[in-house]
Image 1 (cartoon, rainbow, N blue to C red):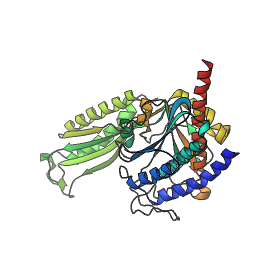
Image 2: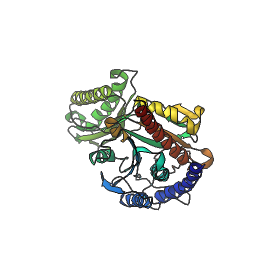
Image 3: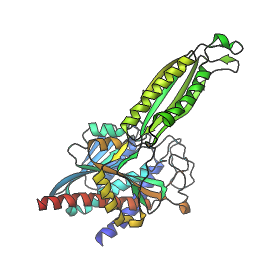
Length: 397
């Protein structure tokens, strides 16, 4: 009963925190005021705080009297360079910047988790670290900086969640193994010989070569990748030329590649580079390629994903916990999972009755704030399951 009453108290605080953060967003690596706000809340709870990790990252640590494992909980802090087009009392006050992905909710959930475990410290075994990470929305993101700063040194497991409006409120999802894609970028400059639009035979048309390349790149997935391996090659922009009667000397193509396993990832890079050079040569042009490896795939630990499927029904009910399909968006939580076991989870936050229907990164994005209480309870269940299991294992040895 005490815990339930405290959770109800925390929910009202989460709403206040979330709305303040939503009104005062900051973009990647610029989260100075956000970090100061987080630090102030944590110090008020009685935590010692480490700040400036990986940029503006913040960490608080709860070391319990009872021995046990170290669990890490992570939330992301940054907003996006998007103009908030919602009409609500907590609309962003910063022109051209808004929390359009739920990170304001993630921070509020983690603050509430820190408050909860501080209040009920006697139930904690070992150590809990609360990581508030900068710059998830840009690459390279803030996770690498947090890792380099020692945020997960000696830790045993890590959990993160994402409020997810494509999933209805009251539901949750995750999956063992790959759940979110690796995201790479490519920038291709086709260089030809410019000239008069009426005298094409003495030129090497960069626009024509680039246009052909766009079509050739589509064959990489359809003809080179195992059909059972999900993959995407998308050309996002093509830009060249200066006038209707001038044959362009240069044309630039940019795009993204999404994959789930390293073999496919490297195959696509190799094929993209070879197809690009061959196509450019066929049209009498040259190609300059800048291929940037971005976030790796988010790969959940099998045992920790199983823990999610055992723990989440206590919060959502067995019928509301789903196996997540693979998702092509990327997340730099992947870097933590390369270092220690863990699980990334999706908490349903969509609700048409509250107009929480717009996709993530949309100017009118919003989520049902009731989802934050579900997220908090899920974090608590995961931590307690892990720590209690370890205590049981120790006692049985």
